[in-house]
Image (cartoon, rainbow, N blue to C red; front, side):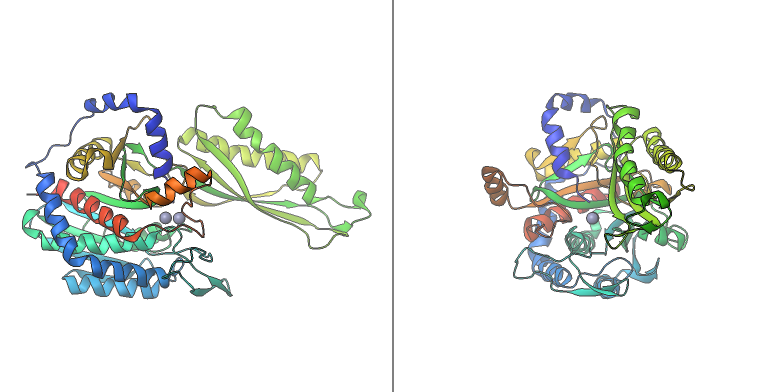
Length: 452
Ligand SMILES: [Zn+2]
Ligand SMILES: [Zn+2]
C-alpha cells in the first residue's frame, strides 16, 4: 500500500491544525523514556548490524514470493529470529511465522511485517533487481517486491535484534509476526484463524510500518484512520449469445457491462456526500473473444474504497442496485453480484499515536516526523493489518516511512514527472535510510510502551 505521500501533502495544506494536537490526551506511562538517549543506543546497534540487514534486504529483494507461496522468505526469517533467541513457530496461517521473546513482566507487544511480493516485472534497472518468477495460477509469472515488503522484513529483523541488544531498557513479551498474503488480503485472517491470539500471547499493543514514496527516512504518524476500507465485488451479467449480425436475437452482456461501468459512477457523483471519501473502480471487464459473436456473459471486477461505514454500505448497495437495474433494462436475467473480499480501514489509537509521535520527533528531529490528526483523511490504499486491530488490539499504530531518494524527487519535480509509487515496476526505495528509519521507529515505539 501507499499513503505517506498523500498524507504529507494534505498535512502541508493544513498546518494550522497542528495547534489542536495539544488537546490529545496522553497515554499514561510508568517511566518517561529518554528519546534522545534511546535513539543513540539504537543507532550504535545499527552501526554494527546494518551491513547484515542490507544483505538480507537485497537477498529478499532478489527472491520475491507472492502470497501464500513465501516459503523461502519465511524460512529465512525464521532462521534469523531463532538465531537471535526467539521461539519461532512456522506455518501459522499457511506460510506465516510467529516469533516470541519473553523479557520479564510487562506488556505483550506485536510487531508485524508482511512476507509477500507482487506478480509484476521489475523495471528499476537496479543492480539487485529481481529477475525471479513463480508459478501463479499455473502460469510462470515475474515477481517483484514492488510494495516494499522487503524493506519491512529487513527493519523487522533489525528491530528484533536491536530490542534484544537493549533488553535491559524494556520488559515484557515481544510477538514478532511475519504475515503472508497481504496483497491479496487473506494473510492476517489466516493467521488469526490459525490461533495467533490464542496459541500465542495476546498483544496489548501492536505496531507495523509501511514504506511509501515520501522522502527516504521521513516518518508519518496518523491519528485515527490510516487506510481505506477495501471491498472487491464481481458482477456477472448473464445475456444470450448470438451472431454479431443479429443483435435482436441476443441479450448483449457487453452493452450491459458498458452501461454499468458508466452508471455505477453516479453512486459516487450523485449519491455519496462529496465531503466523504469513496471510490468505485472497475479494474477488469472480460467478455467475448471475436468480432462476430455476441457472448453470453460479461464479468466485471470492481474495487470499492471508503473510510466511513455508511459510505461503505452505500457503495456496496449501489453496485448491486445498478447491476440489477442495468440487467432489468436489457430484459436479462438477474446478474451475479459477489462480494469476494472485504478489508476494514486501519485505525490508529489517537492518544498512542500522539504520544509516539512526540517520542519520535524528539528522537529523530521535528522535521523528520509528521503527525497527521484524526480529522485529516487517511490514505486511499488498504491493508489487512486492520484485522489485528479489529480482533481486539486497539492500542495500535501503523506508521508510514518514506523511501524515495530526495535527489530523485527533486529531479522528477523539475521535469514534471510522476514519482514511482508502491506497485509501480519502477518503485525503488533507498535501502539504507529507509531501513534505518524503520528500525528506529519500531524500536522507539516498543520502548515507548514497554520501556523501563
Ligand atoms: Zn501493496
Ligand atoms: Zn504493502
